[in-house]
Amino acid sequence: MSPLTRRRVNRISYQVCAGEGDRVLLMMAGYGRSGSSWIPWLERVGALPFRVVLPDHRGTGESARSPRPYTLAALADDAAAVLRDAAGGAPAIVVGDSMGGMVAQHLALRHPELVGGLVLSASSARTGGVSPAFVRSLPLTVAATISADVRVWTMCDRLLVHETKSAGEAHDLLAPLRRIQRTERYSRVNTLLQAVAMSFHRTEGRLGAVRVPVEVIAGAGDRVLSPDNSRTLAERLPGARLTILEDAGHAIPFEKPMELRHAITRLVARSGL
Figure 1 (cartoon, rainbow, N blue to C red):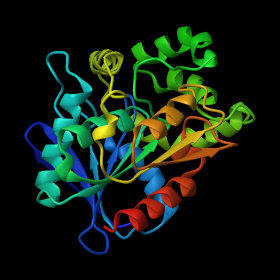
Figure 2 (figure 1 turned 120 degrees about the horizontal axis):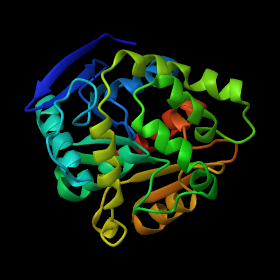
Figure 3 (figure 1 turned 30 degrees about the vertical axis):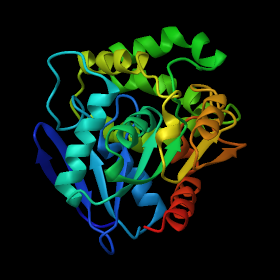
């Protein structure tokens, strides 16, 4: 993996990993995570033929905290500013995982000129659609949300992977993420603001306006967001292709990193970028 350099535009911090050529891959992190949460994935999948851009959502990583509530559309505008700064406004392949996939949808709708294709991993077009397992685990997930102790977050690890994985396997898969999180500042307020922003997420009635190729990927055993959410995305997005991974849960970049890379490769072949 090439060295990362950190840059800033407005109040948003982002990292760039140099690659071959001028093509840009923008990677949007999930709930409560900074752009650095993609580093374990980059280390596992090998060299990529892109300049990889990893933005820190506001309030995460080294980006400034927001003093007031915001929407996922505002996070999409932040990502647009990053792309204009990092890529000069050229269309990018945009990968979004979970909440990052929701932000990616808003980016494609609000700034279509910046998006050459989308990869949406374990995401959704609306609030809701959570699995019964997630509802049963709400006390634990709420405790993790309001705690600044990474040891509490690890209690959620099994929920994020396929149910056939043991607690030890779940811990091993997500340990690289938890190591990164231990080094970063944590904002309880921002985590709650992200949850509020997600509660207002609605794009399903507008996705027909997205005119770029889309790869939708989901785990059949996702116990956070039901894979039915990904089926809805694939139905509503005109250029979408759906892949369901039978032995994966919600944390696809950690459980099935190469499957995500394959989805990006398929998208590039379809987009012509």
